[in-house]
Length: 239
Image (cartoon, rainbow, N blue to C red; front, side, top):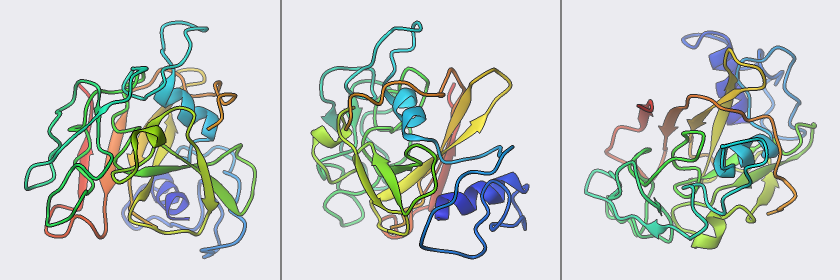
């Protein structure tokens, strides 16, 4: 529901724009059946297929295949540590990710870390699609009370980051280990940009095709509880 409201806010120009209509029609609901995306939406929660492709697709042709991990690798990444401000130890390259409670800072055993400092990007240029926070997806896009989760998070083991690991949860669930990534169309057929809005709220190998094509990436990550004393939001653009 938070993801849908952020999509509506972006759809309506941000600022004082409505969070209840636009990309999704919510009517102040916070639980129950999550709605389908409205026609013409410019921002939306990606389906599981789109999320999967943006994370794992090798990206060098129509039948290129898929990596096991979102760092363009078939080998499990190495867990990052963090400095005293939550900057990951890996920078923006290499087979690394934030998982397994290794990024200790702010007095916590494991924590979220700044987007883009936890290792290399997916083939489509998206940071942190493995580790840091679980990310909601819209499953098939049909209305329903459950939504999907992908990517693992800062306190799960390496397997949770892999392409075969997936989960579902009630769409109203809120947890500091769960966030979301929004998709936005760009001027290219069947292409989506994936925007990470990691609001801390609350696998099948068949899922290997989707509508997430080549795209530039924008990441917006915000955390409520585990980043006390730090700037709660960061926005980064790729080079």
